[in-house]
Image 1: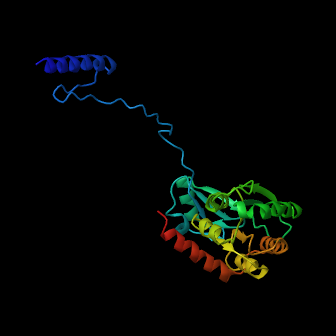
Image 2: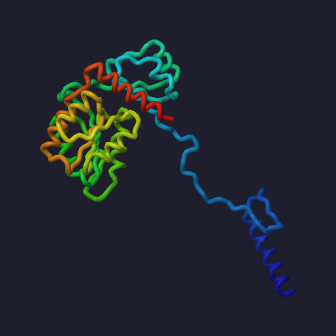
Image 3: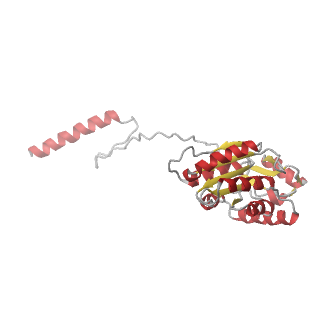
Length: 262
């Protein structure tokens, strides 16, 4: 009996202490002696976060039709070529949905200045620094997304950053360097609107631009020398897609990409 009486006194004391600590509208279940738990979680995320507009790249087309913009979300971004025109119906949809138009400079020829997003992992850091000097010599502007040392890092982080800059139109083209160039290309190509090509020769670099309108170049620091890197980059930046037959094929690539976008 003494033990039972002691337990009753303890329960009564606990209830008294907790009742003073709980909000006035908190309910206590006397049968189970359970009490609501007050959360200490602080939500640091805005209730209505501002999401960046989704970007669609139609810069390979000379004419933008209603079919190109009908499925776009309100407030999204449409990237088009500098000389492209919109059909009347497409223009109406763009106006109704308040779609932002970003015009991509044609940038023809090696003398046309571009804003180049660059990135590398630890294996490509040294070559990236050489690349930045080369781009400066060619008259291009550089946005460096890192890395900034030879400390071990993960290449997808930097490939993603460069690809996003190209996709959203804040950079004209991107160049990424890792050990082989393959992993960064795979990562970059996961970003809608990006066409990344891993190139290890001047011929491939020119082909990737002329035939596929590649907007991201990936290089392997272990597969090309510094001299080869310079030749590849110069050729890649100087080449543009020109023939209509190539534009139609790139448009098909973009159409396939849209089928898998949610």
